[in-house]
Each structure stands twice: as structure tokens, then as C-alpha cells.
Length: 162
Image 1 (tube, rainbow, N blue to C red):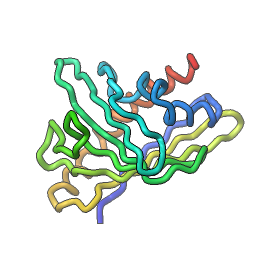
Image 2: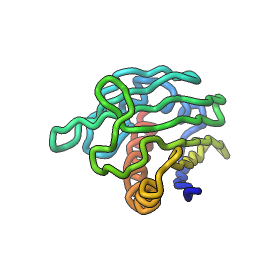
Image 3: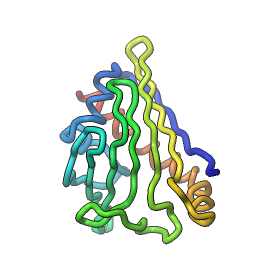
Image 4: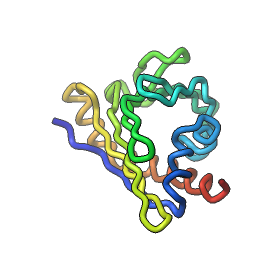
């Protein structure tokens, strides 16, 4: 069994606003992804069974495609989705940086509000990984903390302006 990745951040914003940032295409497109990347939202269906398909233009000009497939949505408490890299038409694809990155990651987001601030917790792990994929995933926790940290910094900036 794989170890689970976890990251948590408390935002100075009410839960409804943080939820909106995750549930509306226009908002999501303004902050999702690594710093320095431009996001193009190709498809956004925020419902169980729906897809979020996106392209991230990297600083070197490459486009990395990705997708979410939403499994469960319990407004405003949680979102369960499978995230993967994809091709330009939305099919699951290998990560552009590794042949051993897991094809799919099952993520659970929880939104908890206390005193007008919202704690967002993300937990995730690979779906049916090989031993190599599991080792790669677990070996990238530090990098994922840094990557999600930058993404959450952008979310924080978005929320401050909203």
C-alpha cells in the first residue's frame, strides 16, 4: 500500500469563497498550477463524473496537459477527484518528466472553516501503482510540497483579490 501525500493550508477567507475558487472555471483558471505557468482551461464540468481538462504552458514554452475526473462533490465540505497527466484531447498520458510517475492519483480535498478562515487539506495517493510508480510517488513528496505550496500561494493571492 502506498503512503499518502498530504498538504494543508489555512486561508484568510470564508469557506464559500475558497469553494468557489475550486468549483468555477473562471476562478480556477486564474490560480491553478505552478508559478510561472499560464493555464488554459479546455473543459470544466464540475459535477460527479465531470472532467476538468487543462493545458499548462510552461516557462520554456512546452504545454503540459492534465485532467481531473470528479468522483464526489459534497458542497462545501469536500471534493474527491482523480488527477492525471493527459494528452491534448483529455486521454490519460504519462507525465512529461517521468516514465514511472503513476498514471492516476486519487485526491480528497476537505474545506473546514473556523472564525472566517478556511483550512484546505489535500490528501492523495496513486491508483493501482506498480512498485516503481509507488516508489517514484513517495520519493517526490518534498517536490510536491513545494509545488502545491506555490499553487496555494497563487490561490491565496486570488482569494485576497476576490
